[in-house]
Image (cartoon, rainbow, N blue to C red; front, side, top):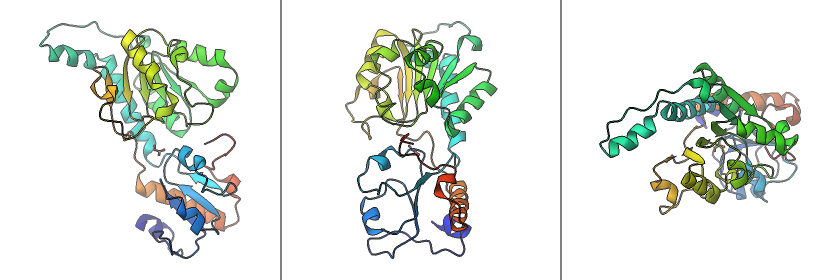
Length: 288
Ligand code: GLV
């Protein structure tokens, strides 16, 4: 809040309460639905996170209210760190040496070639591109799947999966992506593939992933997001030797860049720009 106030010295920036005066703009993440009923004059809502699935699912959000989400705001670098750490952990056999260490087992594993580790990034938005650039700079063959690839048919997705030894999920949760990675899709990955999910848990059918881990179709997974969060303490992921669980922390919104970006957007709107023209403008039709 202070960072935004510092970027907008002429504006009144305050924490929302039920009796706050009517504002022109609101900024938030996981905001209470009451904000929207108590703020009928909003010209736009700025989402402080990357994903807007919860916001779009909320009946409290007026259907015509423009929604604008932050873009990158420090998250691209963190996503790139998270995903490259996971890829390198598997590529350098770190995960298998950890399993061997647990058994006090001294056994050399074969050297890996980067060319045998193609990484497929599902979702090439701002964050997907940051991850792709980092992994490419580390020497991994990287390819991506975009919304239009997905729209061009199941075959395109099948080809993408077949050539992804590591699959990174970085697409928004929309009607098109919900449950997309089910048993049939996971079976299209090369045998012994690796999965990183840093977008939304509901993209993956959890039972299908557990089965694929059991059968060896998926060798290991790094999961930051889950269908139910927090992940229940008895969920099998916690204790699965090939699953790394993190509590939805792959990327935090960094306050200063986010505030600078929001201030620019608000200034543009105040100067007469249309909400449609703003970067980060959410399309309700596309669902992100
Ligand atoms: C977090 O999950 C976000 O969407 O920013």
